[in-house]
Image (cartoon, rainbow, N blue to C red):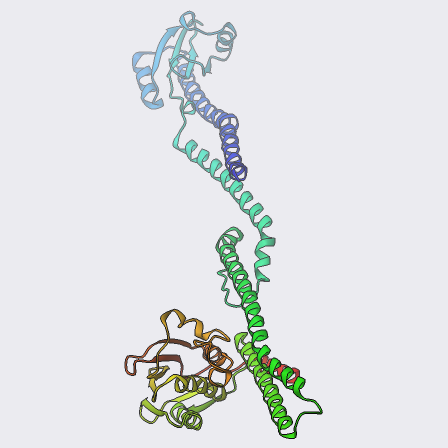
Length: 456
């Protein structure tokens, strides 16, 4: 990891060194030559002009002539002896031959020289300024541009390499298809991966936990189903053992009824387990229709009252005429039957149902005046095959799937269900909250339903 971070930094350092080397050994000598040539040409023009003026006067001059030349040429002109000037002999010979020349290596800067008739007296122009010796603002701008180009090119190269190396991983994100996972795609591959990989890992970890929990739930469900099958299977086996030729007709009839009851119980248990499994895995498509929840609740209470005719069922609705739901009527009816039948089973005398409509949702509360639910078991009662009282027989206790199926139905309708204490009747209170209107079922869900019907 450290090497990967140091590599781009090392590349940038090398790029800056190359930029500095280029400016120092290429740009600066080039600019020096250009500047030196400009200054030399300018001094040569001044020396030629002074030589021309002196030639007209036959190289005789006066202070006024020199002063005028200084003014017009904008250069200082002094008189000196050739022997006093620190010049090489070849330069002196060149000066005597050409009458004027430019000497760029003067102690105080470049100078122009014009020799007079005696070949000893010399007029010196200058010294002139030598700007090519200095690093100007323009040079710094050029240096900055060179570094900018090199660093920019280096960074773009690193960017391109990263994009090319990370592009397969970024393309792989396009093939990720997980329900409930929303990826925030970015244009830059590194940013894309940095943003979405943590989400993907978290989602995979959640799926792994859900899968592990699903395995545990399936194992528990299989154990519970096996346990529930033992009762009717044992009664069926016992009846078959007693069923022989010596058995009386009345006894045979009683054993036959017992075997039919055991088989019916097994069939009902299988249907309940299949129904719960479909709801649990979201494989039960909703058959949506509009219906009045108050009227449906009244019908459910009438059905339950035929079994618990000594109990009182009270319905309160807000609004009074009831609310219109767009949902699966059969499933909602089944959930209400399970809840109201459960409340009637444990109630002393009264079961109360409260229907309250809000803006886009409805609350359905079912409460009773029974012993209530211990706080530690309020979540577990929605698990399959869970009973609060294990001493009850199947006729009073059921298979233990009613509340689990009710929760599956409400969850399938994007709602919630929970249990708590009833403040009005001092028993148990089950609350359902769900939308008034469900979304339409997809064609895929309908095809799943047809496939399941064929299998069943």
